[in-house]
Length: 419
Ligand code: MN
Image 1 (tube, rainbow, N blue to C red):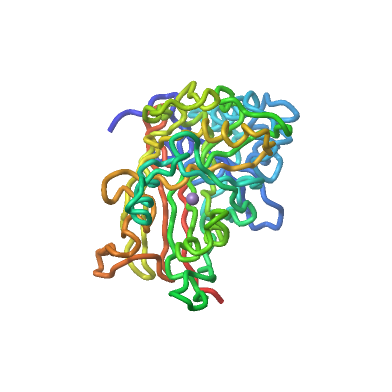
Image 2: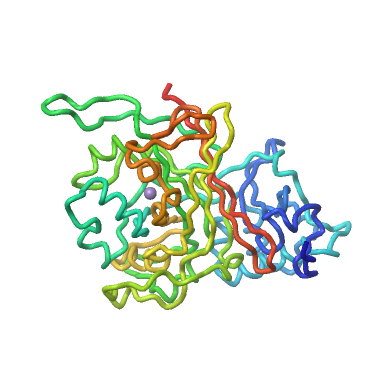
């Protein structure tokens, strides 16, 4: 086993190879059960570093008053709003405090992660969802419009998106209640109504916007790094039967808005700089305001795990956002090119991340060809869409800048029947 370099070693037991070592340090919000409100924390191994308590203990010296105040706030919003220099100084300070040799009577304060209650890591402001994967777009086009070009006429010219529902963005672990709604009628009949029969997942990566911008301002592609604080895994739950009946002419509505799950831990961009890659060559060339200036795709192995009620967890798909046609910077630049203002806590997500091969698709509608080719599970059961009691867990792995494992905060949810 490779020796962990001194710069990468933490005094926290088990942290170095846990996926949550010194090279990662994602932020989350937690309640400790003692009756106080939510507090901001940093994940280190199987622990949460309580930032407010660590400031009070003198473990995080040298920060400004504004930075200390942000670390005493309930979630990431205040720190994000301070901007990139503050993100970097706080990250360096936390890294120093958790580094090897820094344990003392003024040590950072740790709580076991399984003894705290996890909250949303930031207050979602607006939520935009994209359609950035060419493979996903083509798969759906081939399923539903087999006689047409699978790419809509606009698709190669702009990163397609829609405004989702920020109020139903929920933290990992939140139960997902199967939504009810209308679906397509047979000829002349009234539309059927009831619990969705086509409850699906969408494997996505979310980008958290840190800064307010004024109306009329557009974020240029080259400045996106000043605005995006970090990334989270996203499962954008979708009810395909509700969606297919309602989506013309204005796009997704109730088939998407019942819940969108995000991970509890926001990975700072500074922790994944080394994973940034360019997306594929774009042909035809894009307009000037969408021209890439730096790599804004991320090379991460994302795994999709399905666990039937009482059953074994099973890997059903593996995908990677590195090949997305439209990158995160292009999405944010496009979302503001009309002068739409941004707020701290806005999230924009990639849309479903799919590859070309079978078992690299990021949704069940693709994995099962809309239920025509069910997945066979190890216990002999089959799945087209999700059943009540199913749990879906998304994980993502890479190496950190020190060569140690880095795992994004997982996002999971279990399906419950409507009451
Ligand atoms: Mn989506």
